[in-house]
Amino acid sequence: ILAALGFEALATTSSGFANALGRVDGQVTRDEVLRHCAELCGSVELPVSADLERGFGHEPEVVAETIRRAAAAGLAGGSIEDYSGDPARPIYELSHAVERVHAAAEAARALPDGFVLTARAENLLRGVRDLDDTIRRLQAYERVGAEVLFAPGLSTLDEVRLVTSAVGRPVNVLAS
Image (cartoon, rainbow, N blue to C red; front, side):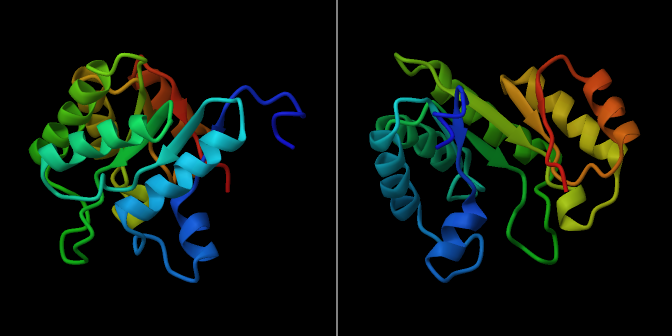
């Protein structure tokens, strides 16, 4: 339907897929997500980008492997977030988050057919209302190779303008 409407690309949602399985977001395995993405990619002629959550591991090497496996599943892109999954410290320390995005970017650049990497700064979505830190994170992710930036939870047009003027890459915005 979306292709017939003229869309040029599609993107998945981790929460939508998890909910379809009767689970909450973050409770689906990498293998399950990649099988689902392979089915999606096989059913449309459009490029598909996937919400790859935290990259299905804490270590940069795991995140890089997720990017390689995502491309092998047919995806044209994917997002990696800096949410740790730890309620006590929901956002990775900046240096570790940057290492993870850098590893993902390196893996994406090494792929023969390319892969569009989106780096997500999850502060606002996870209750950390620090727009300055969110911008610092997006700028750092841009420096290490993210091609698209995403800060879910921007709530005003002024916040969107502030973020988009602070970076040089495209910014994904979630309208809510």
